[in-house]
Length: 154
Image (cartoon, rainbow, N blue to C red; front, side, top):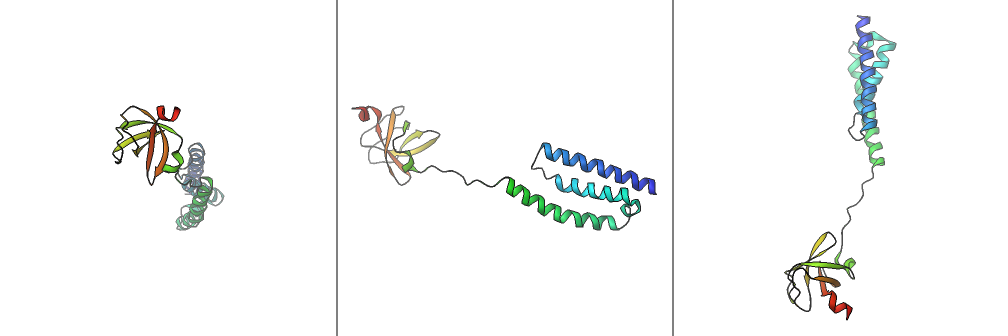
């Protein structure tokens, strides 16, 4: 019985180490918790083999697992602080250039202009055909006001 317990303990230690190495190579997979539990259970089993095959083993695993889980989650939260999503507001586009994708007609917001990677509803003081290069000259809420680049040069 002692040889079986020692073999199981050694297997726990090896599997625990492999899980921790896997977590180190590929962080975020949460293999730290089972790896730590197996490593500690294996170490206890190597020191006192009969304990590993008794009813104490699941209790020890639970006692080790709860704080390990909490500490792992806290560690990963600190490691990867969430970054708020960046959004573009129309007023930040003033002065930038874009390309008309849908004809811009004065008095309507049916026109579409692509500025960088975003497409915006647009209006202007004159008709601007699709494909024309434009400059953002103003913003109105979530829409932009554009002018043909040729007008800006003159």
